[in-house]
Length: 113
Length: 114
Image 1 (cartoon, helix red, strand yellow):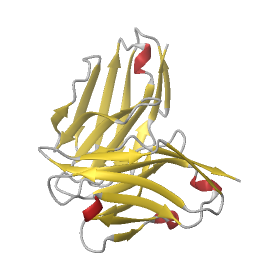
Image 2 (cartoon, helix red, strand yellow; image 1 turned 90 degrees about the vertical axis):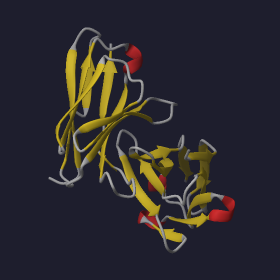
Image 3 (cartoon, helix red, strand yellow; image 1 turned 30 degrees about the vertical axis):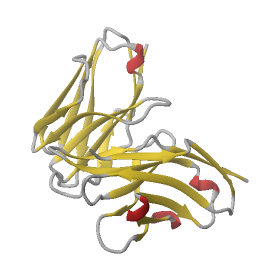
């Protein structure tokens, strides 16, 4: 496999469920990102991990919990979400000391009922 | 701080017509600039980037962009639109702060009419 892979591609969950989104990159990068893309809103950067350490958390509610066990994997744990959390969640990776160019996965489309 | 402004959230062109998507940036340092394309229900794909060197940058699918420092612009063009170009396009600038990340514009949705 190459590039950035996200699973699942689609997820429907109730407000009381707990689920996780997974991201895996095969590019040898050392930085990973979670973005949220809602309809008619700009891309929102949620979390940044560099060298497996969280270096940015943009005031994201605690019902979103990221985890980066190694430089190739990134998770977003979800619990007690709200309907307004329904969105496309995009994972990306890059070289921490590079140009900033991001390589994106296909996204996980989340619907909260 | 770095920022990007994309003028026109929706642009419509006829098939075969020139595509021009506008992007202006603000940066306190020499910028690295990017254009990404997003097809429905997919992630963002890099079209082209400018870091240093030649100011006219060629990308995939026949797109190109020109870095104009005097105008703080990085407009995306394609001489002849194809139906398959219908997508959303995002301009971005590197933020060389504590975290090396991209600052994205709000996107321009391109429609191509037959």
